[in-house]
Length: 276
Image (cartoon, rainbow, N blue to C red; front, side):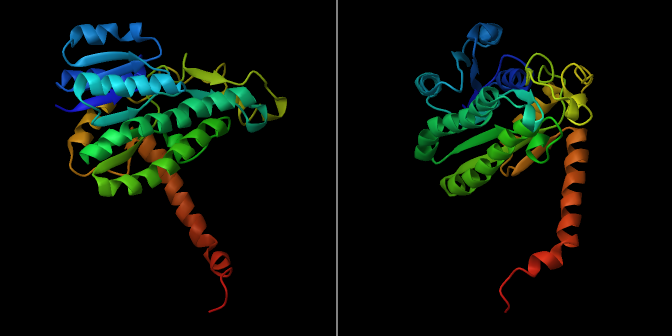
């Protein structure tokens, strides 16, 4: 039976995905910093669910989670790097410690999880790694520069990883959600304490006290979870999977803009080669 290991299952997309995976009859190692938040999942699926305390920034907990999956279910077939949080700040406003913590969770935590499960996947010549990015991994909005930086890093690493492990039978896909009705823009969203007046009209509208989108997002996390489960069952995974109508619209427009700019500056770009 397929075994999933999902990080960040206390709420949001991670919770919906854990519920969907378990309801579908798969094994699941469900994780959160506080495993008490996962007891209802385990109680409903005592034979196929294992709750593990996991802070992805703590190496000993990462190793323990991978070991627990091997001991209980024989290893991890599908890793979902979902744990993470948002951060709002103009670049000049960003706090160094807060930004370091952001990268520790959103990027280096995912890397640690990947390195923990890859030996088993390589041995079996089989596995799937899903890295949950964001449309912010394709473009950056004012006030989200640091968050986007973590997702750009995650996507760059994922692109290389896919090419490294593909020949070994291991698949890698980047998940790029738009706005979903979770706690991401609520209690999970952090921001810099500093507020510089000159950024009031750029980064300012995206500060938590000014952002009124929480609770009105178009995306349904339960539907996203089902889309992910169905995608994993497909023989051919996409390199990137956009989730949500807003994601398709926003990223599509960004890709079109990039293509137009490449074409507009093509002559300048080509003129930098040595003469042939």
